[in-house]
Length: 365
Ligand code: PMP
View 1 (tube, helix red, strand yellow):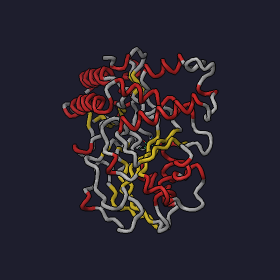
View 2 (view 1 turned 90 degrees about the vertical axis):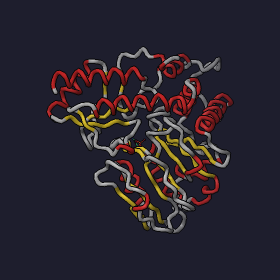
View 3 (view 1 turned 60 degrees about the vertical axis):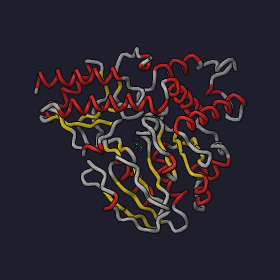
């Protein structure tokens, strides 16, 4: 088993753009100037060419199989990242009543809400955690009852907060930002009207957004929606209404293929679970480190923690870097330390971090 064929010089704990599997990068490098005998690299290919259509279709088929996406869902490969889809969701799903419900459990839920608020006549905050260290229980949500959709952020990348279970919103379609959780563990797609993700964590290069939307919701796009955000038009055009982000789509396909080779989502989820348990175990056993998130909502992808003596944070980050563990600082909005441990982070990277944390505590704690 590869444990991702790791011969990197650093363990990169960045939240995104994040580490990609080394075998994927190697393969992309090999194919950079001549994609499988075509005489050209993927970046140079027409998106209408037979080769590229093959790449695009294979990537979609692999994603469908990895996530068990039914035929009644469309899969779109779009541009503008997850932030672009903050608007996409509102433009495509709010219906003409232009009402939507938002459950805000962290930084990106707030951003999604603020962006959608520019487009909607009425937008309702059904629930908001304060501080963002838990998910408010569903029986406390104040849903408007007439919304086109309910929006959640399944995993909050900055706050390290994950939904324990997928909420049930009945007839109202549930829409989730899954940027930092997609493909890391099984997600029951049938529970959602739509899912969307920026690619730069578990899929590929930043800028690409993947949208998975139930077909029957597709004719709701509001008039005057710009073409690049029009899910209906994009679905009809196979995401090629304009030139798609071809190279990113290709890399995404390689990542999906790699994940298949590693045993798929169930297999990677087991490794991810172990990685998270090791880190949280180390935090909970220590007097120096602490994590503020309610136990059932602790993210398995983004592990945030602070040090009891804040003045030790800088030396912690500096010494970690000296030891080959980089990009561990928390988001500039919240500070502290954050270890993002997406699919491409091998368990050995987490073992190295855990060992370093223990040594650092012995030395300074
Ligand atoms: N949602 C979540 C959960 C994210 O983690 C991020 C990026 N870190 C975004 C949205 C924004 O993504 P982008 O920068 O691709 O617009």
